[in-house]
Length: 293
Image (tube, rainbow, N blue to C red; front, side):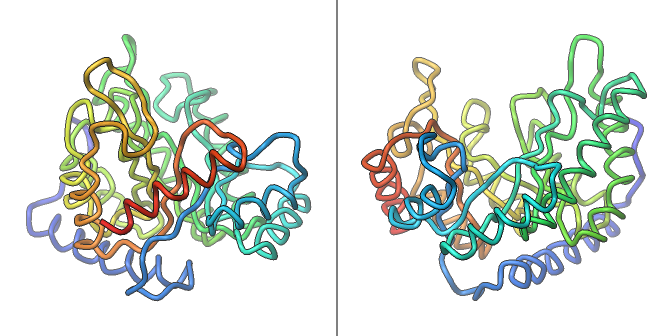
């Protein structure tokens, strides 16, 4: 596989440095006590569509959530205003989801790569305007015509072009594990992150996305301080279906223990369908049960 060489000693040294810097960066960016518990957040799209933004944030707060995940906005002034509105409500926008499915950085077409890079730069500026500290990125997509090694190299080459803009914005590029046939083990995911040798590239870990071929607690322990954000989902292997939190096969007690072990105190954001106040309060209560385990 074509990628930067790193011997074992260099790999471990980089991993340790990345872990230490990552922990400091997370605490500083979130303004949080490292002894505190993770915080509950919601995706903006999960709130009732018929409410205005101020009412949405107020409802999220009333339901027990203390953060919001949004989408990029090209209008930076509007993003600043929305970010302030969220902070004033006690639910700051903590991250945004750029994605990466539409114009993947692993695409063989240089024009598609350029579009993907442009979209991420816009997302980084948007995150800075919101006042949040991370942008979720799907780094690559392996397909019938895009091989694994090419996806690995192209995505890393392109992400390196974004490290400077990320540092300028003070926003982390948060690589997420998704069903893209890429980064299929926690060891590889950790190595992929470490090879950037930058505190501005970290992991956005999705708990539910690994249940078909692994165990979330194992991934958490392996990724450790590389994790800056976490998505919560649950999945039932029998019947192959997504479920509400606590209704699937995720071993939540083990997940909670693993989060304690790595000292994770950032945001936990469900990636589920939205609903009304009763639904959101039930979801908040389910998350409280997980945090109490």
